[in-house]
Amino acid sequence: MTAQPVRRRPGRPRGADPAVTREAVLDAAVELFGSRGYRGASLAEVAAAAGLSNAGLLHHFPSKEQLLIAVLQRRDEVDAHDLDLGRDAPLTIWQRLDVMVDLVALNAQRPGLVRLYSTVAGEATHDGHPAHDWLTGHLDGVVDDLTTAFEAGKRAGLVRTDAPSGRLARTVVAVLDGLQVQWLAAGGDDAGGARMTADFRGHVEDVRARWSTET
Amino acid sequence: MTAQPVRRRPGRPRGADPAVTREAVLDAAVELFGSRGYRGASLAEVAAAAGLSNAGLLHHFPSKEQLLIAVLQRRDEVDAHDLDLGRDAPLTIWQRLDVMVDLVALNAQRPGLVRLYSTVAGEATHDGHPAHDWLTGHLDGVVDDLTTAFEAGKRAGLVRTDAPSGRLARTVVAVLDGLQVQWLAAGGDDAGGARMTADFRGHVEDVRARWSTET
DNA sequence: GTCTATACGATGATAGAC
DNA sequence: GTCTATCATCGTATAGAC
Image 1: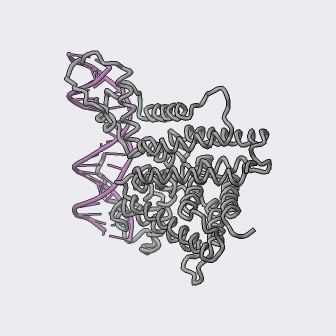
Image 2: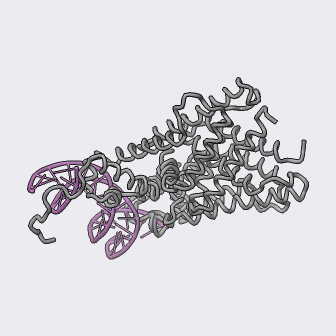
Image 3: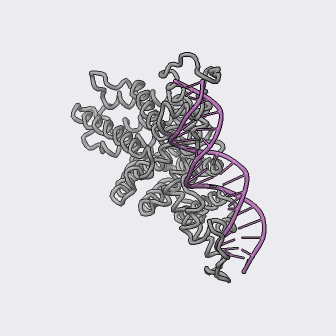
C-alpha cells in the first residue's frame, strides 16, 4: 500500500459530546450484539454503525468485553424502567405477572433487544463467558423476586398455600425466555410477537386458574 | 471427550477406521460446541480433542459448517432414539409428555449435549446462521408433533375440547428450553438437574390438571 | 488417512498524530 | 476525542508429502 501524506480534517468531525457518542455506540452495540451475538459481531462493525473508527470506540470503552457489560447493564435499566420497579407499594403476584405480560408485549416490538438477550444468554451459559456472572445474577434476581411475590401472595391469601412458589417462578421465567427464542427463530416479526404475547398471557392465566385462591 | 489419546506417529498411521475417527470427531465437537458454542470453539480445538490435526479433521468434514450440521443431526438421532419415536402405536398426549419428562431426566445427566443445544439455539436465532434452518425445523417439528398430539387427545376424549393445543405445545417446549438455560447458567450440576426435572414434571402435571378430562 | 507447512483474511487492541 | 497506521494473534481452509 502506498504511503500517502496524512490527510485529515483537523478538529473534531463529530459532535464530540462524550455522552452522545457513548449512547450512539451503545445503541449500535445493542443492535449488533443482538443480531449476531457477542462473538459474532466485531468491534469494527459496531464502530462503523456508531459512526466512528475502531480506535475511536475503544476510547470510550476500553475493551469489547467492557462494552458488552455496559450494554447488558443498560438493558437492565431499560427493563427496570419498563417494569416500574422501585415503586413504593409492592405489587401483588398477580399484578406483577400482568406487568410481565405487558413487558412481553413491549418486547414484541423491539426484537433487537430480545435478540441481544437470547443470543447472549445462550453464549453466557458457559462459565468462562464474560457475561456469565451477569446472566446468573439476572436469572436469580428475576426468579427470586417472583418467588418472593408468590410467597407474599400466600400470606395475603391470594395464592393457595400449597403452591410451589419456586417452581412456578422458574417456570414463568422459562416460558418467557423459551417463547422469545421460538419467536426469534421464526423471524421475530409482528405476527409472531402477538402470538408470543398471547401465549405468555395464556400461561399466566393457567397459573392463576390453578393456584389462585380466587374463583 | 476422548477416551484414549490415539498415539499418532508421523507418516502413514496404522489402519485407521474412518468411522471410528468420525465418531471421535463428533464426540469432541459435541463437547466443544456445547461448552463454547459454534463460534466460540475453533476447529483446531476440536481436532486436538479428537486426537488429530486440523487438516486431518477437514478430511472427514469438508468445513466447520458441515461439521456443525453433522453434530446437530446426530443430536436429533440421539433424541429420536431416546424418545423411541417410530413406534407403531402412537402415544397419547399424556404419555408423550411423560416421555418428555424422562428425556429431561436423561438430559440432566449429559450437560454437554444440552449446552450444545442451548448455545447453538441462541446463536442460530439469527437468519444468517448456518444452523438457523435446523433450529426452526427442530422447533417446528417438536411443536407440531405436540400440537397434533393434543388435538388427537381431544378426539380421544382425553383432553378438554376447549384446550389451546398450539399454545400448550409451544409453552411446553419453551419451559423445556428455558429451564435448561437456567440449569446450565447455574452450573449444570446434578442437583440442579434434579430440580430441572422436577420443575418440568410439575409443569406437565399442571397442564394435565387444568386441561385433562380425567379427574 | 493423516501429516506439515502455509496462505490469507479478520480480529481485538495499541501508538502516536492532530 | 477521534483519527490513521500498525501489530500480534488466531481463524478457516488448502497444497502436497508420506
